[in-house]
Length: 522
Image (cartoon, rainbow, N blue to C red; front, side):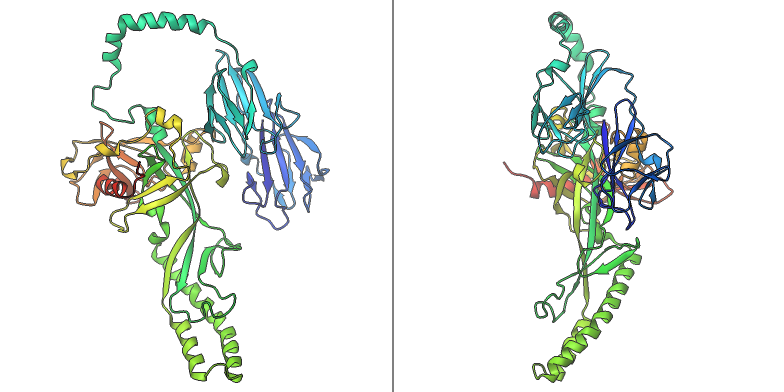
């Protein structure tokens, strides 16, 4: 079962862009059998099915194709995920606080439709989380939308509530017999097996395709421009006068300047980062860490033009205030004119700040900011030519399952000497998220977040900062690890020319230098 929240609030699963929509307008529940229920949550302007209003607080059955309207916004049915094909499972159990669940739990931090337990036809059990507060398996977090195999003895906690699932998971006594036989078989053929499966090509971690996929993550960020009027004499003098100005996306969908971030939406973007330590440290691009430093000429002109208009608009109020102070003798006319000229002619300093910054792990589904693993920028090179940065999960810990599968790039053995790279002799691989979540989710039916893996070749002798490779670079792929055939880090994908196969990555030595300076110390 799955619950979708519909409303004007940006945290809803389906966001309604209308003043006539309520913050939480309605809820849609998709049952395991494919049935769909709709409930109006006491909205201001109502919910309509086939142009007829439904009673608030009461669930009604709907079907795909029905004309559904929230206030004045029509439901687009492709926003509603198709029901999952459960034909490969012999049993499916809903877990949550709702009475509709097969396994009911109680707790303020548990969701109504918190998770689903699935038993396949071989008796294997899988847990899928749908909740806001998440679940854990033996203390290891299960991200919303992620599915993981579990065993009878695992400790399962849903939203802080322990759940005993042992009675629902088939026992497998045969496995013990098979295990004894397998142990004998391993002793007999162990020498041959070791020879066959040891990676004799000198590969270093991550070795397997699964590990390489999990070592990369999709970065999600949103930011505002910060504009500082450097020589503003009215700061800390006039009560309520802005210390800084901000630019974001206004209600009309265009960039807009304001004295606060209220009423502004952040500028969103995606990229790629990859794990390089057990302490939640990841490598990526500088332009992913501080995107406001890479604004184009049009944005620069737009910011300065809007700030000039804002200064002109506020100058009228300032003139009246200054004139009053001159009349009362609190300020001389010369000082008043000097202050006003300083404000009007002061140079602008443009920077930025994140509204949110985090990652979506491979295998997870990011519906909103809550689903992100929150992260922060630890260090960036400070040089646009050295497009690398070090970020870290706020938990300061790489998830245990990623560590166990060896999904961490060995930065200690990176190829820092670019002179060893020979054009057309190198077999390179890029693992990342081109165009962010869009490609990753469309490729996998919107169920799981997964990176794209593709090959590249070295097309030019590297210089001190960049390596030119032959590959099609797409937005969102920035920050992807570039590795050689032995899985050693070679570079961090950073730029390319649109419509060509000319792509660049920053030399890995710059990330190694940054990591050695700012890494977590024991």
